[in-house]
Length: 346
Image 1 (cartoon, rainbow, N blue to C red):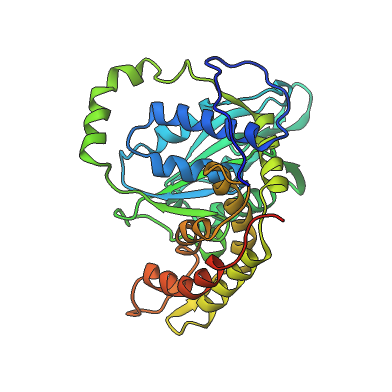
Image 2 (cartoon, helix red, strand yellow; image 1 turned 135 degrees about the vertical axis):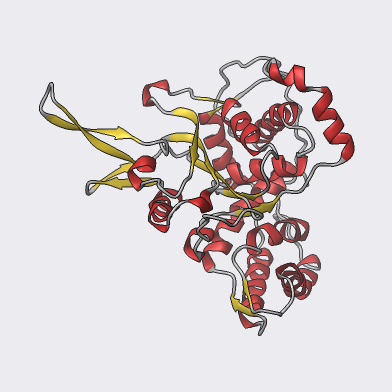
């Protein structure tokens, strides 16, 4: 039986009790969705994927063109989060503009000598934030990209042989421009595999673009600022609720493994889906089920997330067709079996 989620009736932020139910976790989704949609028009599908990635504790890569609203979207997400532990001295949002001359220490932080005390102290880099926008990530050198691997996979950075933990909420929104190839460094497979989703953004519809132009003044004056925010603790609580209370049937895990094996055995595929992608996909499926007001994962969730999860991880042989066609064919049989299975909790 599906839970009956309740609509949040708050209009201003109030300190809330700890979230322990699916209804409470869905309230977090509603508040994030309302604030992001108020500030970014015509991107409801991307907003939904960002919320799913945030609640699934994953990172997201946006492939887009300049002026598509990616910075506005990332800033809106950071502005939607209230740090209820200010003693940590971690800001909610940081933007890193990646360039070919960027150094790893510009991202992770560095040690600085203080002449007054004759001692070295650590100055944290922009990775120490709740939401980090890695703008044009493919414009930086592989050396800097490798500095991100540890942060994205293990939520920690190592500087001068000392490891420092990042905040548990640490969330990366990275962007790359597919059209401008001058001065870019293609992301290696190990880096791509750290991203839960890769989303290809396109131009928004005509009606949405007209709405953007008509709402310029309102958004300049802070559209959606009167809507309730969410706290850092609420997001972490929602993650725990989703993990523990959204049911994943054994048939779902079997379907994921079967899909991955089909990609590995397909002669058109040079590199199939990794085990990490399946591990990351489980909480993403649970988070999507929550956004659809369900307490269990279905075949629809698998079908909806398969493309953004697998498309950037598969390497297709030259002239073998598109990656979407390969994924579609690999999904068909496992999804058909999954659709016939019982996926609710008994």
